[in-house]
Length: 288
Image 1 (cartoon, one colour):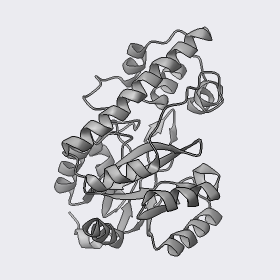
Image 2 (image 1 turned 30 degrees about the vertical axis):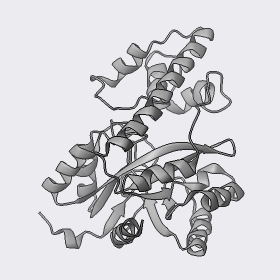
Image 3 (image 1 turned 60 degrees about the vertical axis):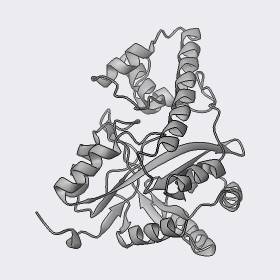
Image 4 (image 1 turned 120 degrees about the horizontal axis):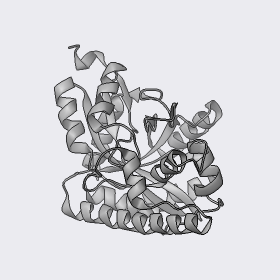
């Protein structure tokens, strides 16, 4: 096995079966190892259920696993995602807060299924889970991508994108808004769990004025400058913004695995920074 010191790249955004990813935590770490990365963050939506397995894989494969999370929030009527790095994934207060977010998501899922029934599409949550092909583990999170998979499986959509465009995306026929906390509260939760809050993929929000407002209100320590859905101009813009605010610059593929022959959003390692960024995150954590 090669030395960790020879592996410099770091992908700080990946999802597993614990939320809406397709792979197990172990498989994500294995892929990172095969890509020659030195570190991988596990950042599932509103859950840390995949971290323990990923840490075991990291020890086995001699690759750093950063325990993380991606919390769904809202500001200015826009969904804003907050990444948290080096959170204590066993902290009982943090775990209960995340569980409360998942319970809200579950209520939203049922409302989405009710809207689909109004459209003549009969789809039960049991069918959504059945498409997973495995039992749902404790603390795992079911979200819209799982419902989209079930819609495709039952022939109501051509693929994942079609399912979102027709039924699940904002403004689509079965879309249901979800009550969310403010980014400031998510940042506070992450800090109280011993972690470092970073603004995820600002280019996806389409509103840099809002991005600045959220940054100035919320207590972030970094920006995900390099993301699979950011173009070169966006990366340059957010790099300048990070420098302006004195923020840590992070990168992430936002890997979700392969669905219907497509990788969402990018493959593991497609966006990366040096593992020196981990030192910066640890220093920010110590200062908090």
